[in-house]
Image (cartoon, rainbow, N blue to C red; front, top):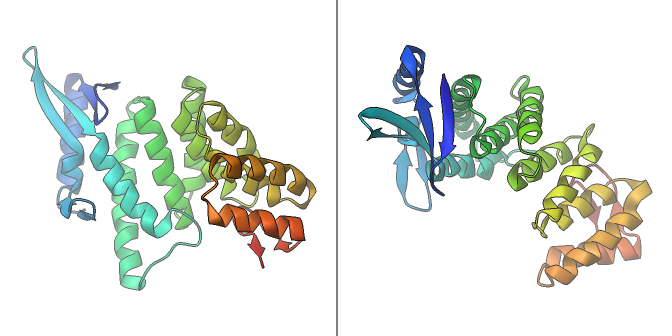
Length: 253
């Protein structure tokens, strides 16, 4: 059995107990150590999946954990290409490489999660990775993301990042984007004022709720007056120059 405990802003511990836990750790390391390298542009370093893990001896027992900053390096690189739909790649070779790397990354988190890890720092990152996979048409990644996020929010209903990232995921889908509203509202309530833009876009994407979206967008601009994109969007709404699609696929002139 593996459990997790947040021990700092950059790490959380995986407490491996028993034979099963050690076997899982060895499997993850050996299966992926040579499979994945991602350039972390902020530091000009390359990381493998092995770099996700750290270990330390506590009271004579070896403890293992995950490095949050390395997790975020991986997610930032994947998001650069497929954080939103449609994904963006320079060529087919680049897409093939990123898809392979993301699948290995997701499988690593899946193995850890399957052993009962319910640390919110792991859950929202796992859900985000799956949502990126959804943008790349990975089979069943949408259903898996929903299960991960909803499990996380059942355990941690007031977690800001779980609410925000679940809202982002839902808003990116044509069938579920209106269901993102309560999660965006919760994220705003928890202090993330910039999510008012996301919430406004969901309302604006529906012809029946444009006025509500306009109201929220005005509130957002009061909080972030330097956002030129939001100001242009507001003028387009007021002039009636918008074309409705879903999510952020709203064009204006």
